[in-house]
Image (tube, rainbow, N blue to C red):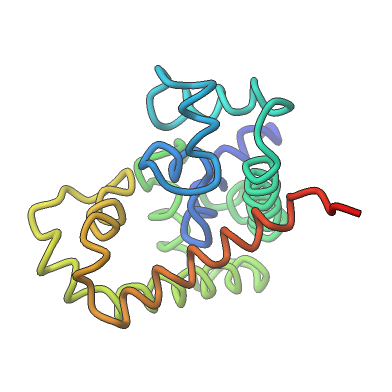
Length: 189
């Protein structure tokens, strides 16, 4: 299996740890929002938007460049931890649609310790979000179709009405992204 295919298969797992710059920008959030509007206004979500951002990588704002760098580092960590497991258990899994996630879940007990740790971290993060926001999702987003960040977009639209626990979880995520954006700003001296 070529390295690019492994990266393409493992990349969806990184979403559990951090939302991709393209996905956040497509929803109108995150440090790449203005870059997407400027360079990729006609690009659809997913591969087309990702490819457009890649094509304009040197022109992206420092905050977006830092966000992309951070997302790539997380994907690389997943790749290093799980590439052998993907090759062993899921060689025919196609990117997108949850096929890789489902395959790894089927073989969870057989995964390498490093990959198991990444899966464990992703599950813990997802569970923390679920606990903090499940009532809000039911209250405000019950009719929202899951996938493509639709639930998160719905929560953002109702931010002022959310429970404190969900607002806190959303604020933590925004703080992390602002921190990465600030780190990308040049140091005036």
